[in-house]
Image (cartoon, rainbow, N blue to C red; front, side, top):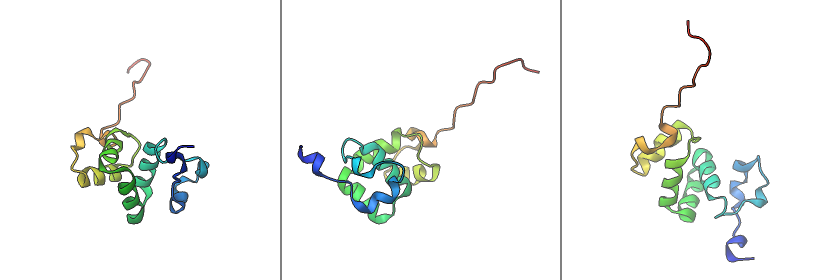
Length: 104
């Protein structure tokens, strides 16, 4: 077992991961998922842990790439991290569905 596998996600984050087997979460392997979940639901203590653990650059990448952060969360983190909101996927207008069939 390497050093990274020994590092556990802190117990105080367990409530945010009710839908998975918490003990299976790996700090590096599941970074994107952990960051998204904590950004959307975490408190100040949780966010401090997130920044200390991953750093702002990785958090910035997650905010930029994920489409499923809430809009308020995306707006907040784009402002905090001085990001161009046009580059934040969760803030982009959803695609319009293509309607099939005959038009009237």
